[in-house]
Length: 296
Image (cartoon, rainbow, N blue to C red):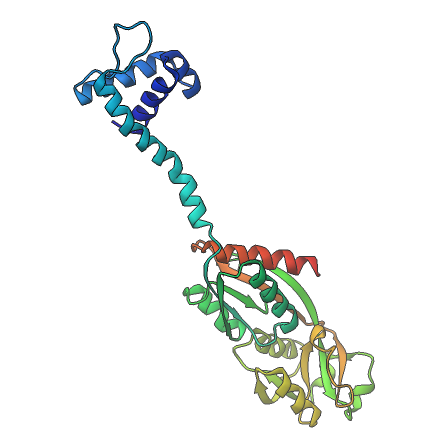
């Protein structure tokens, strides 16, 4: 006996006809008849009075129908109930993001998501891109935001910005009057750089070597504010994505486009390929993607 036996039996009773039951079940009448016969053989009782002109239940059939109808109803509701419970927007999402993330934009995303899905709890952790990737890989984070193009073999992802870096110098620095600066022109400068858990740390060093010099790094930090203050004190030069330069105090520092090469600050949202994501995490990814791509 399986659910198909019960479903066909219930349809015969409801329609009082083997023919109609076969039609609504999209099977042949002979298949319905065989299923009912197999069911009666297994139960050891007759379910229908075959001497009657119309399809009529025996006493045993009437008792069995009550039970079979409940089972079929529960089975039919199972997928609906599971889908409803699974897709409840409730739970926790753990997200990692680097300190250089555009904070205003992501604060807006988090705020609007909270309004729409008030029962979803979000935990945020601030790491450099390298640690974010590692934590997404080992499952510590559900979702990560990184400053690089992600490895497509490891992550599902979407990239939402490619922002060129600007050189940041003290307002008293001679380069502050330049319309643009080539990277090679910075060979003799002291660099205030990101800490080595930032992908931009390696990228900037690699680009400097490619144009012929090893950068002199005098200070490393993960904090934009401290980086800018250090540059304002004329301790060295630094680099920031152009989108983060709008709120700089131009009395203290100057932002200059960097060329030859242009170094892009690429930001992507990643999650581990093949790993199960909760329904709330999927909701957040869809919400963030629609929001970020709409404001590009």
